[in-house]
Length: 519
Image (cartoon, rainbow, N blue to C red; front, side, top):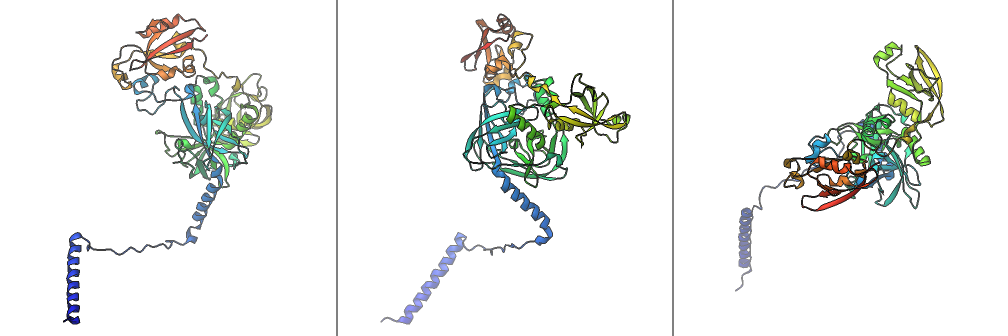
């Protein structure tokens, strides 16, 4: 007979057993370890907004500035032909270039490559400002926009003496562009933003970098451009003196890919072009530098109008004023530019004299050489300017009509080298040790190796630099076993004739390059 009470008791018993069994199983599996309560997250401000309102306002200003100007900042990729690109020096041959054996320095150009940097649009019709070193020597320039559109650009003009270049694209509609400020009004301690669009190849990993800082100093003469011009066989010492280096220094982070990007003030106006860093590692170490926009604008106008820069000059030899100079000439401060000599027949002949001290141009003080050069460069040849100076302890003015500096008459190709035929051709060959060239794949060191090709030389223009580290096995029909063999074989080639250089790779393959011996 069915007993409902007894059935209910059995159900309770079975349930309790099942529960106890489950508890035991859970304990064995670790399901009943200690649990923790969810932490209570505090989201209320730790300090009242009123207490930090100035900082919040500055932060908001940075945000608004970034939103306003980044659409006009672009990424630039430039493809250089073989003779214009750079490669790392093989460790085996670093001693031939007077370079440390650390892989950081670069050799003369030998292989094609893609370089990159930043730029910013300066007009709705597609003119873009950037650094000369971003696009110099490029035969293809590609511009990447914030909306990921891509345009091919042409180089309107470039100026190695200021590191300024202008490129242009053709767009279907007006482009966002930057507003220019007055870099002469910039002050040390002023807040600025440095903006770049470096990218990595064709990726967007580092697109649109915005960093903040202050102007740390004005008028920094780094001598970077002078050194580059001095070491470039296309220019040399005659051209180096025309370099203008009057950089704005900032503590805002500027890394190599940001070259060519804008430095802006808190009004959103461009006051400089990010250009260089002072670094022992190649990365940012606390010092960034920008070209003042007043100078860059003047250069841009000439490049657009003439295709090259018409640099004005006053025609004097000058030096910075020292403390001793200030005392000797009765100057009110250690500031100004000492005239060492006046070019006969030049603009200042009859107006300035040796030992004059220039202290202002058009009533704007100039305290050092680079500042004078930059201020004069803002004018054009033919302009008349007022020069304030101290002479015999008296302050006086002179009016000078500027003429044009002969920078466009400086040769833009390497001067033919004199001396041994291999030097005239632009190559250097050596007998080397196996230890030095084993890293290049050689199993023996017998023979003569190509160790250097001079930039801009006849050999370089024919792409011989691409054979660095190979053996030179024949010149014309002459077999080569010593460097003297190379010189004797080349010595039989008359100026203007073609010489055939035969190279051998570690795997035994050979290649011939025909080069015309310079006249």
